[in-house]
Image (cartoon, rainbow, N blue to C red; front, side):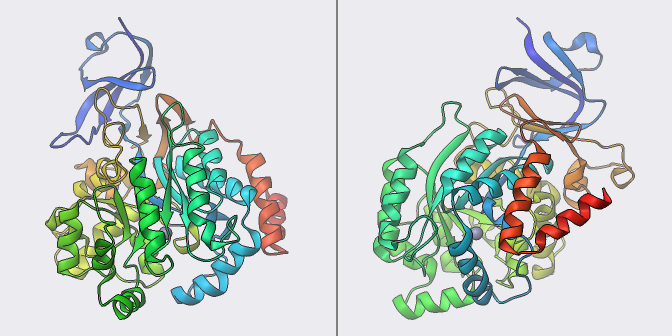
Length: 451
Ligand SMILES: [Zn+2]
């Protein structure tokens, strides 16, 4: 029996452990799943299929996994930059959120985020925000794989005017769509931080995700100020504090983990806590540099995340890969730290592990879902190529991604989005931007006039 689709004549990186690049590689797809991968010289040696697609020597690899995002914040992109985190959060982001964020804001911002991420080769995203049902709807329409998490915080938040309702709202979100029928969307929750959620909220939230066997997300030890505050209040580091509450286990995803000392790192690794490393956000907000090489040495699984577009300001995992590969080298004054292949694994297979999705995505292997991307290699900045992993980390860019597939369905062909209408979406974004900053619509108009 033949397969549905055979992608062949590819430079194939499966990202399976210890795998080597395959020249003249192929991927056979049956329905939503990968049926076979291999290498074949000559079309006569390929498996049978209904449809053949000649990749023309392009690079085929698993789609990227963004382990931390606040998709709706694309609508705040570039609104407030170059400020201390406290000032940025309390004078710009929280007030903007309380004024503007509703279901349509989140839906529109998440559609914009989805468009940007698909065009950058992201096939799986872990998202966390308020009105998260709007993001869930947007990702479902875009065809992306998403772990959507309703935000939990102990003060009034968009859609949760009374902070004491936060867990009830999160429970309702989880129970209204825990897993979509196609398995692409997971619904869970996200506690904002140890300093914005009480011990009771943290424990209640963890109990809720535990009862549904879902990942639990939390910003942890992002800034020195947070670490000082928690130590002042509890006598413990943020990591030890969460452990004292019973929050640390293999389903917990600690986002940032910048201010973690050796004892904290050993604790995180021992508990099997997954780490989402967001280097660009940490640098832009001057939070610090997470000790990622040390965390990996202790045995922690680390994925990469973009964080929200208000603190990055894009959702480009290629930039995160490049930065992650370099920042730890300079901090450790050791150019052998985080070599290219390890960083590509963080953006793919290990990212899937962080989200508990390692059985369905993150590498190209028979039985996994067909989540893959294709990069055009015949470009000056990718020529010559001696080591594909080196190019992916140190020279490739989001615009090099030509095709994107999730669960066997093309979301982008030849850089054209197939599930989203960019013209309609752009008008929706323009409407929101004009509200958030009256006059901003003029920027759009100016661009339209020039076009
Ligand atoms: Zn974040």
